[in-house]
Image (cartoon, rainbow, N blue to C red; front, side, top):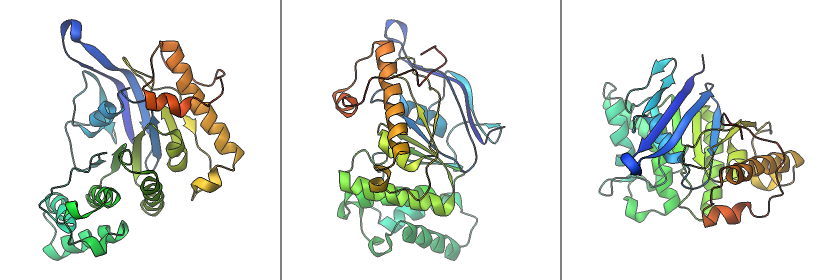
Length: 287
């Protein structure tokens, strides 16, 4: 039995002629302590899939299992970090994190909850900004607050929904390094949703491509057997990194051609320089 499982997940929106099946027959098994990246193009249903994992959206079919128990609605055992920071603007950094801690660990003493908050502010290097309001922070610092809040709930699994997508390149690279460091220290089970293949290779143990929608499903996973810690500059020099990158990107491109999908402009630019694919990927539908 896997630690976290998706079995036959289906989800559609709308009704009648406007009904659109976003996800179909999605299966995924994740082991405890594993870092998995689900990689797909914009609009393929990645965020819908993560929302189902988090219990924020109920699937039309299939089930989500954590330690063999069916997930029903959101819960503190699944921490979520969204692309948009979702911070309360009238609360300080410390108060935003404390709000989650107080709710999850209400049986703890006040002193213990306070120390738990401070520990997680230190973990993301925000102790000196603990008194500031979100409007006083950069985008990268706001995302650190969201990450601290998610981790401070001590979830069994952390779900990251394109958490660096709204950041500039330098801030994004810095936070990727921080997430890798924190994962090395805590070994939480993590699912990262991203449209950046390089980001997946940098952070994950396994990359699972999501086919373009409608009726998106998961293709075969790619193992990332690269030593940690990983630095982006060092990775670029490794033949194994180039091999994984080309195979994953070629797999995504092959799925687009097979399904006759049209890439969003940003995704098309990202994959334009990748060579023609060979038979490197497959999904249940026969790609």
